[in-house]
Amino acid sequence: MKPSELKVIESKSYKVFLKDIKDRVYKTQYDSLKAVNKQYVQMCFDIGKMISENLEKEKWGNSVVENIAQELRIEFPGVRGFSRRNLFNMLQLYRAYKENLKVQSMTAQIGLTHNLIIIEKCKDDLEREFYLKLTIREKLTTRLLQQKIKDNEYERWALSQDNFCK
Image (cartoon, rainbow, N blue to C red; front, side, top):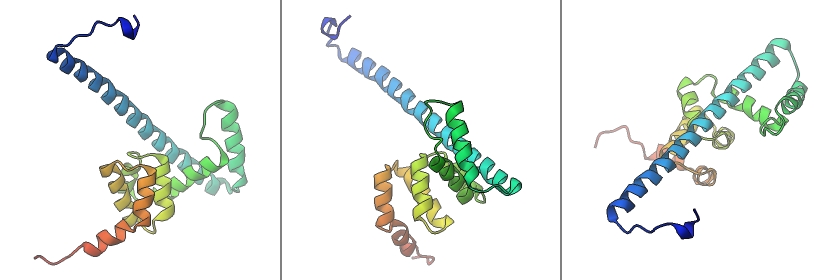
């Protein structure tokens, strides 16, 4: 049936009902994307951990990462994300958060690019935690996150904190 052949139903209850169905579909799509993202970021963290531990244990140099990238691209043709650069990003993600379990759980709630921006631009764990929470709470795009970091939102927030009761 073509859209032009649809019978138009003017009933208010029908329109509300149809909107509810559409909202449910959109929510499921959004929830599915969030779940996939969470698994992807966790996979990146795990791969970063595996690479880090083996570089240390086996005393391999960083050049082995290029070999790993090539092997993964051969094994998973058409799957993006296994370049040398991305593997180093995974390594960076792991190394930045391996000691901080509280922050680790937050990293999976935002995209890898968000995480990498925070790791690159923030000086310490408290600042990273602030921007992780802000990104999650306000559902920041990468562009907005970069702007908030550039505008020193963390420093302004820290300066506004007061230990004295008023």
